[in-house]
Amino acid sequence: MIDHKTGTREQWLAARLQLLQAEKELTRRSDEVALRRQELPWVRIDKAYRFETDEGHASLADLFRGRSQLLVYHYMFGPDYTAGCATCSTIADGFDGFVVHLANHDVTLSAVSRAPLAKLQAYQRRMGWTFPWASSVGGDFNFDFNVSFTSEQQREGGIEYNYRREAAWSVRGIGDSLTKRGEGPVDENAVMTGTDVATYTRERPGMSAFVLEDGVVYHAYSTYARGLDGLWGMYQWLDRAPKGRNETGIWWRRHDEYRHDGR
Image (cartoon, helix red, strand yellow):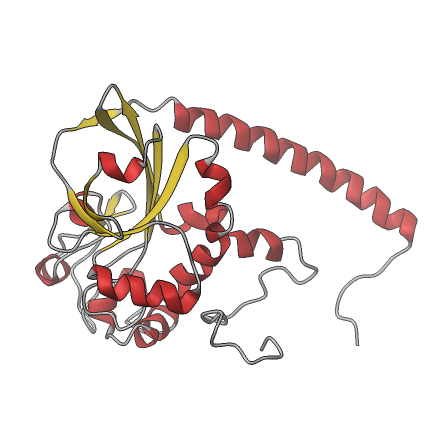
């Protein structure tokens, strides 16, 4: 039985035209916000960050690969993970295909994680991805850009993520404000990385933008948490599906973990 209102083609068209106006307003507003992102002041980076890449040791400037702009996806893959975050993996499935287009528009898109390079390489082979992926293991990059934290920060309420400070953890190693007492999607994601909630959530998702001018690297932008929604291509399609996101918890898996019939 259909549990949704139905109508005539004329009724649909009238409602669609009203929605079209709202969509146009949203598009214009999105353009305005994008311009404000570009107008943020650039912050010079003088710290000498070091990374491990397929090509060997690299500086932050090296990650630009000869281009003037660098977009970094802060992929959740900590040193103790046995596999990359399943949620980050669905996002990476989306951007793996258009990295080549960005590269031909003076933009390098690279993932950065704290896991050792060999772990990243093995997982990347499993997933069939080709985007650049650098390891920041042993360095401060992830910590300085607020996507990696220590157990002491968890216990003492020293985590500042998505531009706000979290309360000290009190259940299973992380603040209740994030996990609703350590249950649900965060717990499921932790299991899928072979860790517990505390270990899993010492890494967080995010993206940061950098620019290289006259040999100097500047930080231009960062976003976290639901600020990444617009970069999660899957959700842009679901938001246009008849039933929308239609979710009660984590339903996605790594793309090689679905049944052959897509379930």
